[in-house]
Amino acid sequence: MREFPQDFLWGASLSAHQSEGAYDLDGKGLSVQDTRPRDKHDICDFKVASDHYHHYKEDIALLAEMGLKVFRFSIAWTRIFPDGTRKVNQVGVDHYNDVINTCLQHGIQPIITLYHFDLPQTLEDLGGWSSKETVQAYEQYCRFVFKEYGDRVKYWLTINEPNIMLLVDKKILGKEIPLKAKYQQFHHLMIAEKLAIKACHELIDGGKIGPTPNISIVYPATSKPKDNQAALYFNSIRNWLYLDFSVRGIYNPVAKDYLVRQGVMPEVSEADKALMKEHIPDFVAVNYYSSVTVEFPENADDMMNGISDQQSEDIMERGFYKGFTNPFLEKNEFNWTIDPLGLQNTLQHIDDRYQIPMIITENGLGAYDVLTDSGRIHDPYRIDYLQKHLQACKDAIAAGVKLIGYSPWSAIDLVSVHEGISKRYGFIYIDRDEQDVRELKRYRKDSFYWYQQVIDTNGSEL
Ligand code: BGP
Picture (spheres, rainbow, N blue to C red):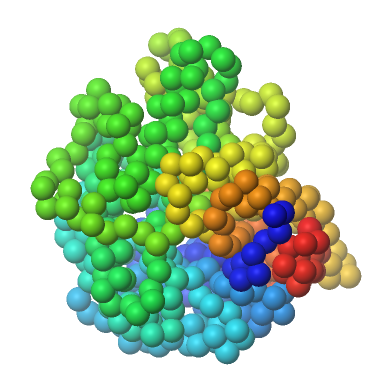
């Protein structure tokens, strides 16, 4: 069958720090995203972003008009616990109550990410994910929000892209740290996720929870056996290490070999082992933008050109893998490869390994959109990208993959992790630029009307 199931969850996604703004209003504490310096030149910070904090009613009404069944957003941990733990900020709690209720009034089910890159700064100052205290604080925060919102919210996501957080170095987690410390953080993050799964199942009647890694299948550059080894290792280091931990409760064997050879294998206690095995997610949420291609780095002097964002070719680890420009794939304006069949490949690989329901929680095209004088945004390039990726989803479903939903990035324009507001992903245009926030007026893009039609026909017309 080459159709989407009738109860398919059509959605769109956001994260708090990239869209809300109001970074220090109404009792909110600072997160590492509010304090980290921007990566380059004059790109904007997250202080105002798309001002979704003040526009959420208007935004959710627009998303309802587009026909969404689900809306993925994240809770800013620092609105609930400004210092990460202990003291609750009731204004923040009320805010998300209102956001959730607004969604439900429009017939939209929320899918909530508990943590999307925005660790409370107070916890970072106490050691961040290197410290077990952060694990406890995260568990306390999860339990609090499950009790508060679990009567109405049934879909939860644990931690957005722990693999990107760890592999991208200082850009997201705040500072560069040695590999050993990084993999200790990995272990803590993944144990924190297990505690969230446990709490969700204990506290929410009918609650479903899943991990949200960024999974991209890794191709070998050539049929050389060494390139195949490079792809095997990078697939395991980038993808399976995370999903094997979440879904199977084990350290992936190939990634483990890498960790042991690098002398950075974390300590795993007996109690951790039990926790890992016992608490298994209900589904896997997949963020996918591009496939990745690697070769074996033959030349000991090979260096990365710049800072990796893990979705381009600028990746390398001596003795293991090095990014390679795939000559068979196009690229977008920001040097990310475009590979719709890669999405089908990725979904089938996950299905082959785990046989678990999946939902796509990010997929999309960042581009420089233009607002015309007549208030239109013509974005055929985005429609083309999404159309081809949805076709790949259909083909994956036809091949037996249990895909339950598609929630692309992003619902509205927001501030990109790496490139400011100019790299736009939304179905809804936010009128502001890097420096001038103007009136933040909302405009429907051409892709808005296209996606509306897709949802209306349950994907039979792409
Ligand atoms: C993912 C993140 C998102 C998002 C997206 C696009 O890794 O989960 O937060 O921003 O990538 O990346 P960018 O903003 O760099 O274009």
